[in-house]
Amino acid sequence: TLFRSQRVDMKKTDSKPKDAVFSAEDGLVKMFLRGRPVSMYVPDSLVASYSLEAKVELPQRKLKLDWVYGYRGRDCRCNLYLLPTGEIVYFIASIVVLYNTEEEQQRHYLGHNDDIKCLAVHPDMVTIATGQVAGTTQDG
Image 1 (cartoon, one colour):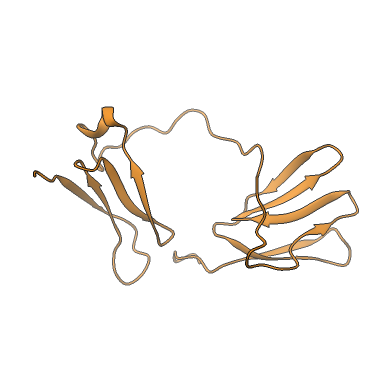
Image 2: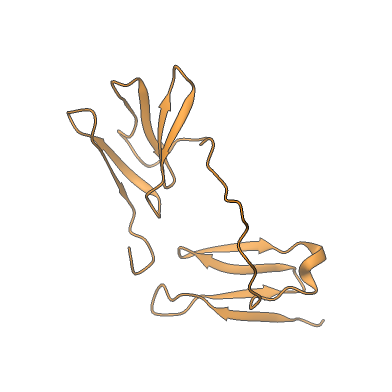
C-alpha cells in the first residue's frame, strides 16, 4: 500500500517537539492541542490536494458563543453560587458562565486558556476569582 504523509513542526511544548501528521491513506490530520492528541478528518473532496504547508486566509466572520451546556461537577466542588443579581455563576471547561434564571440568558467570561478548576466569590458578592490548571505552553 502506498502511504503518503506530511509532517510540519508544531510549537514545542515539552523537551520534545510535537508534529502534525497528515495521512492521505486515512484522510486525517493527527496533532496535539494543549498537549492532548487530536485527530481531524479531512473532507474526502480535499484529501487528494490537502497540504499542511498550505496557508489560507482567515474567514471574514467569527463565531460567537451563544449558549454553554454542561457543568463541571465530576472533579470539582463548591463551584456553583447564586449571586444577589439573581444570576448563577459556575464553570465548564475554560468558560465561566453567569446564568440569569429569570431571563434565561447567559453571559460568559472567556479569559482562560485551559480548564478552570476552582471558583470563589468574595463576601462583597461582586468580585469573583477563578483558577485554571497549569497550561502546557510557556505562558502556563
